[in-house]
Length: 277
Image 1: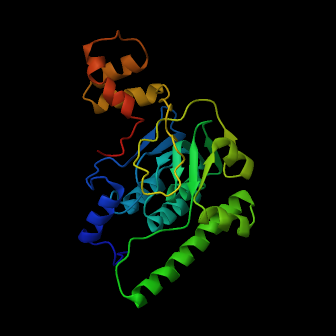
Image 2: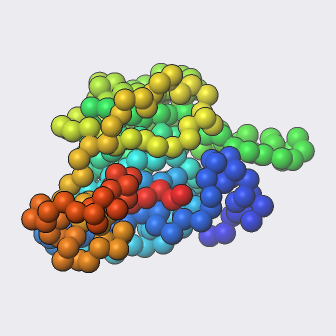
Image 3: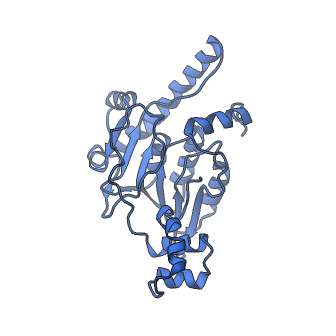
């Protein structure tokens, strides 16, 4: 489906809004683990137009045959229409789906986070919910139509939140209107997530200045957790190391070397996916 607002001009405006280049060669990764019954989907980026093709992502997600799918999310949000589509694709997937909030699930990403049969977060993970917003130019009739659309989108978001949390619609509407930021503990108490798991959230390295109520010092003192063996191997392969060498390093069978130092920055910023630079 082609939407009228998806023009080159609007793509540039949205990119400027997020302070991020449109070019993004690796917005997500689906990786099968050694056990073929399991797969992981890494989404560490802004969601949807103009940065990545949600339709392509949905096709790849639908093609996953694993019995268990772990969706790992670190995103400040994005295009809500695209996110609704991805949410449905993940929610309807026949696998046992677990969504893990790696650091941040803000705005549209908070909807995506609720697509799992189980939703997890680290103790320092964060979620933000708010009413939908738009950049718009037009006469009063154009803007009235946009207001009507935003009202319908907000209602859909509210339905998804309340179905998961069982918070009443009036309270949820107030939370969305206020742009509410939630800690992992608050997410658990209110029912947005099912479990808080051991470990540290990765750094949520996004420009959040577009939001009104970002808590002061929100991301200070958040250090990245140690990468898993699979993530380390992927980072080394992305940096150009051979498959054998990457596997050896990931398994801690190789000595530290200049090559390790050369890709250290890549490892630190990579959790199997880069949100684009």
